[in-house]
Length: 142
Image (cartoon, rainbow, N blue to C red; front, side):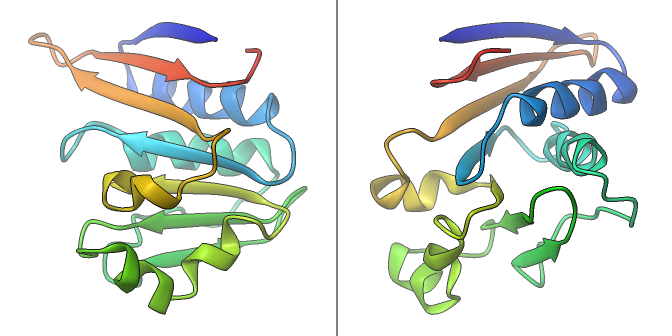
């Protein structure tokens, strides 16, 4: 399935994160793709809220992986500084892909070859008017 959404505000992006995660089951991997500032972490914040997680959601650029406890466990990864599958595996990140929670991965392109076949891809494009066009692809019904 492929869905396209227009997000005009930060709240729209958060709401979309909520909507997508509400349709997910345990062991869902979501690949968040888009340029710097596209709204990947805002999407993650909405996803976390849907799971009942109230703590601050920030991009884990320097820690690489943040874990949160909610209705389902949430693994939020930022692979911006990772340069290879081997680097990712050394972090223990591959285990989290199958740990029974929801796994949100920013900059997942570097590990494309080991992403599960049923990964949900969220592509965020910044438009000239600063709105976002978001395409969600995968075996998910929104």
